[in-house]
Image 1 (cartoon, rainbow, N blue to C red):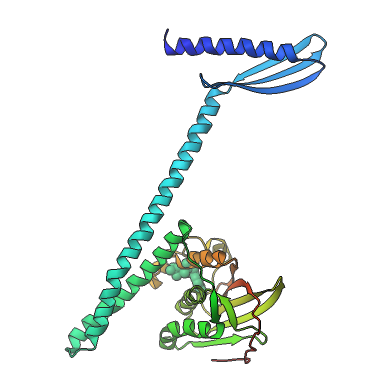
Image 2 (spheres, rainbow, N blue to C red; image 1 turned 180 degrees about the vertical axis):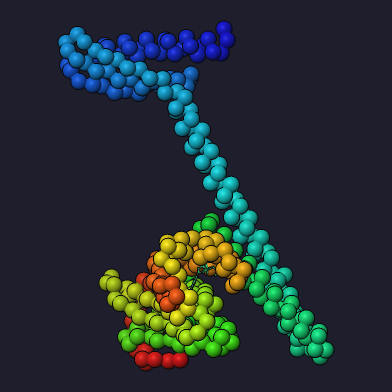
Length: 327
Ligand code: ADP
């Protein structure tokens, strides 16, 4: 007997059994739904028995074996696709980590080379190597963070740190670019903000540096201001709010919803004009969320943007009070 024939016989036997079972057990009026399956043959039926009167029944049987097979195949395909995506992210994380080591050596050695006597041309070439190495390192660091976040390996540390120092260090990183564009760079820590916090200073600085570097990049005149505030949120925690406000080109309302997605730039000409990968904000979002916080933006095209993030942190025992303004 062929396979198809055997399956047909099996189905018929199964249907007869089902009819007997349902009729045998039916009492009263109403509808009964049931699902029967035969494990060995892989055949499944859906049965609906409706009783209209003492001796009137309507039995609808539906062979749902194919539907169930398709659902199983779909589930398996989804699991395989997820495993493949995870493997790729893991590969990317490992590769970018491996590339960083020799790249750091290239940057370190060119820095040492710049301290040795050389002609003006040689100095110029060496400086170009170092600048390019540093740009490459930034991209690799972004890819590393991005792929680490994908496989759930973003490490968030918890240690005591000084919030003011963290803000100042982030500002130091963009000071040369801001000066070159003659932008005012300032920060304001509101009164009552605790400065001795417990959290991940490196990650907070990284997020701030990213937002600041965008603010400087997309502002052609005026200022970039960092503000820091904090509110108690109960249960021994405070919510620290950090914002980077610029007087730059701003972002049109229709672009705002996609801004924190990966590889998202407001328009294609951005890459041409300003460079960048469109990864910075999506990494910031992942980092903020990994720390239990939220990130957002308020912006008006042509008038500037305010990128902000909030982090819940344990209430420090003694918060130092901040002086009102520092630049
Ligand atoms: P990129 O590496 O391209 O800067 P980001 O994720 O950091 O990637 O930013 C995504 C896009 O958001 C930018 O390309 C730019 O179009 C827009 N953007 C980010 N910050 C600002 C800002 N302060 N002012 C105006 N546009 C901004």
